[in-house]
Length: 296
Image (cartoon, rainbow, N blue to C red):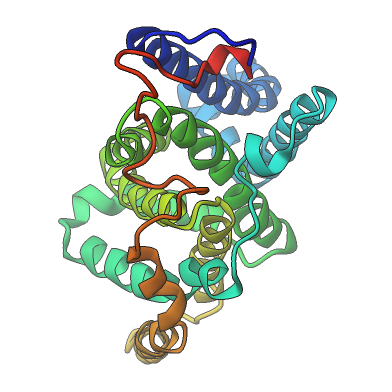
C-alpha cells in the first residue's frame, strides 16, 4: 500500500474489478488450451464435431490449463515478492482445522449425491455424461480432478476472489458472491447449483479457518470420492454401488466425530489477528477503508 485510503465505493469497485480479472484468467487459460482443438474440429465439421473434440479430451484440457494457470498465479506473486500466505491465503492452521474440510467431504458428497438422485432425470442427463467424461479411472484423470483442479479452483475462487471481496463487504456476502461466480463458471443449471453449494461450503470453511488450505484438502477429498466410485462396477442389481454408498455414509458419520475439535472450532469467534466473517470490511474511520485492491 502507498498510504492512500480509497472510499467505500472505490474499494468495492477495485475488489470486484480485480476479482473479474482472476476469473478472466481462469476462463481465458481454459479457452486458450482448447482453442487449437476447436479450430481443427470446426474446419472438419460443425458444432457437433467441436463438442465431441472437447468432450474426448476434457481431462487433458483440465490438467494442462490447470497447471498453466497455477504456474501463472504463483509466478505473478513470487516475481512481485508477495508472501503467498497472504496473497493466496495459504496460511498455516492447526491440524484439526486443516482436516475439517476433508472430514466433512463424505457427508457433503452423500448429500449432493442424494439431491442429484432426487432430481428429474432430464435435468441430470448432461451432468451425468459430463461427470463420466471427467471422472475416469486413469492416472491423468486422478491427477487432473483430484489434485490440480481443487488447487486451481480454491486458489482462484476462494484464495483470490472471495478474500478480495471479503475485505470490502461482509464475509457472508463475499462467500455467496464468490460461490455464485464459481457456479456460473461451471455452466448449466445443475452444474451451477452443484458448484454453488460447494463454493458456499468451502468459502465458509476458509473464512472461519482463516486459510484456504482446509478447502483445498476438502475439495481434493470430495473429488477423490468421485474418482473412487468410478472403480465400482455397474451391475443390474446395483449391489456394489449400495455397498459403496453404505461405506460412504459410515465415513460421513465417523470422520466428523473423530475430528469434532476441528469442525466445532470453525464456529468459534475469529481471532483478532485473523479476521473472519465479521471483522473484515470494517472502516478504521467513517468512510475510510484500509484496503486498496489495486495496490496489491
